[in-house]
Image (cartoon, rainbow, N blue to C red):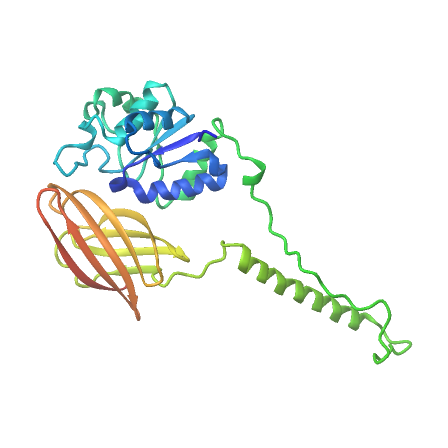
Length: 334
């Protein structure tokens, strides 16, 4: 079965957002409706034809665009979009050539690239209406996108959300009183006994419901120990990570970061990460350094909890030179 929605993205630019959007769309529209990664290309197969075939089977392509989408470079220093064999370029060009609807999805305050920034076979992308998905309004923004996509795909009965009901057998008393049970005294009301029985039945059903939910519904998850707003008291140099806002449940967390700027801290946006029980790791691809110079900076944060503090390892790499590593302890923000 062909996938109706094809998500095109760069791992170094929008991997976290693409994965989160894929999960939301498959929950709403079904596993068969969404395709995200070109995979399973056999050795010896022309990957250009494989990509073209995958895109050709879709009804709409979502082009995930972050701040570095148009400028990110490869190991050779060449801008990836200028490489005619770049996967993202091949995916979007294939859709445009086939007149498949292409919807640019902007994240992290990214702007639509100007047509002068695009190679010839992608210049039509600059004139496509875009949608924006923000961290603060993620759920509502995605709902609007899903509504727009319903003209391309419809949810099946299996993807519709239905209420969860507990099916717990309740052992009722026998139809006749046992011999050793004292019969009700004539003239006295049976209501206290009936009320007690009703309470017991409700309690048993409630316990059963909790058991069923605990084993069959993953929506009930424990709070993550990294949650909260945190500040770095050792952040003194411009460009240092100064604030973190972490939220999530279970092993999925969203990490929002700010770096030290003046007069106010600079918002780096949010990334999603997986918490393995000890630490979470997330990466930000940043166009500029703290002084506004283009450095192709990539900042990777590894975060763990120690008592009432966070241990944060920050690894910076730059396209034009090496990198550096810093270790900080963050404290609860006041």
